[in-house]
Length: 166
Image 1 (cartoon, rainbow, N blue to C red):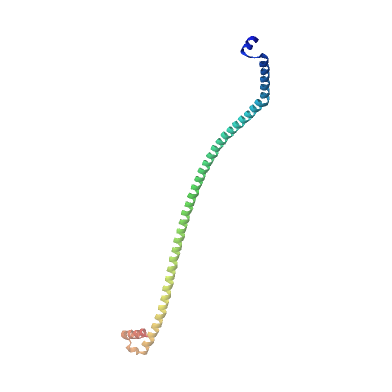
Image 2: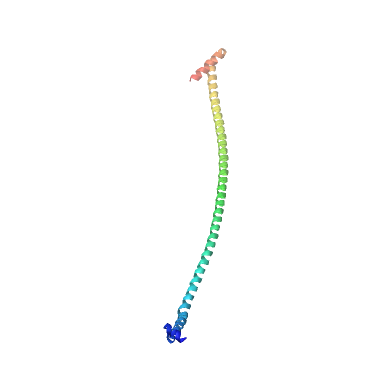
């Protein structure tokens, strides 16, 4: 076998020493390079996997938060619709109350006007009666000055006319 190796140009001692050197380098590289690099790669893979898991979890949570947000928006819409309806109802009630108050005030004003009108009529009546009494007094005084036998309708009318003209 050494003949075959020598014909091929391979020195078995040199080959053996290179083989030993190769295995020594292989052991050194395995211990000091390959295993630390493999460890770093595993750590990075673990971190990447953890990051992907967290990203998935964040995506799920984001969907949950999005759904919760949509629910809250719907609730807020229903609440706002309820508030608007309640406000409209209050506005209608207030409008009705104001209309009733306005009508009551108008009725009261009409009553006050009627009372004032009656008072004015009574005042005018009493003034007319007072003036009538004065008129009758003056008329009687004028008629008494005339002769009592000659008193008749024409004279009374004439006395009244003279009092009117005064």
